[in-house]
Length: 134
Image 1 (cartoon, rainbow, N blue to C red):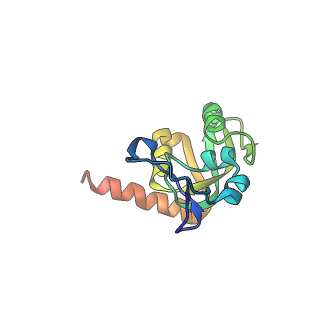
Image 2 (image 1 turned 45 degrees about the vertical axis):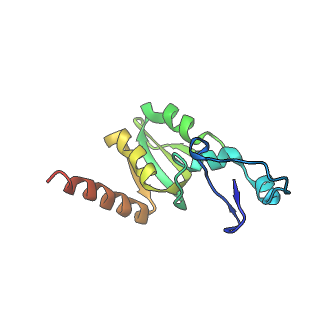
């Protein structure tokens, strides 16, 4: 939905919206919605969580290619062969803890190649979790 105060499109969980009523006013944000590429938007965001939008290069084992295509699609993504066992994907994502959680689910089968800032943030995220178990 469009937030009039913030002047941008935000995610709202429909299952948590209460007391909805039709107010009969013109809808705001029509131009923003027209400009929105919904497929790209959905591919970039993980479970509705926002973060800084980044172009991230990931290196993964070939067996994950279908999972990557399911997650990111083929439009606006660059897939290249790295070697006989790996591929790289340059994807646009909103970097968030949900994105890092998705990476954790893939374990040692995927690695953040660039940018270094995202790789460093991911390492800090992992360290924070590891400290809980020390």
